[in-house]
Image (cartoon, rainbow, N blue to C red; front, side):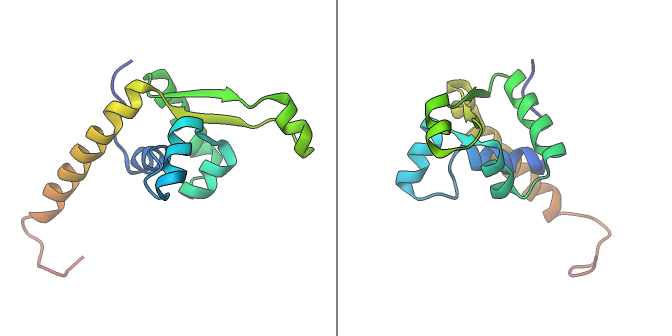
Length: 121
């Protein structure tokens, strides 16, 4: 599959999976272990109907992998297993570049908008 489209939602999810909003220790854990669905939903403020199809598109592009946590961990905590999502090697390599390109594209498209008066909507 081709490279995922860098929509604002995609950018938000990739930043979360890169651990961009976390401190150094947490960032390493996010990259290694990933985040479970509810945790991602809370971090990104995206509803499930937006988040999970987006994660599936990233998975099909080879940028994200998903896995179930081990049964004994969930049982010890008395809850169902969680499904985790983390960047693949390909995703960890390409996501920062794609985010940087999307940021440049957004900045250039909003900085020069002919016909608009500065400060006007």
